[in-house]
Length: 59
Image (cartoon, rainbow, N blue to C red; front, side):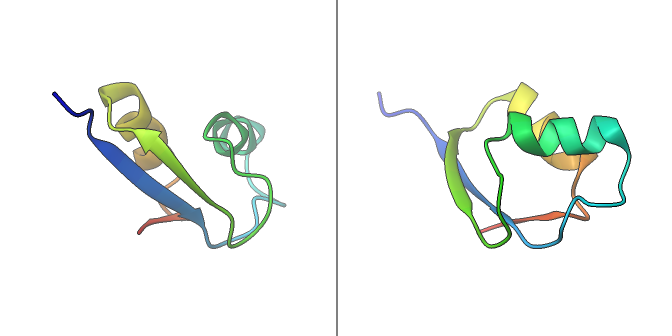
């Protein structure tokens, strides 16, 4: 069975945001604007994306 994945792209800078939101963006593996990461689609990853939904985009 193939694992489901989700691709996330950082579209806004985390500068000036709350420190826990910056840590969440780093936890997703995103460091630069327009960088994309393909992650396993788990409830934990979905929660992280929801927390910083104003900074990221699901591709």
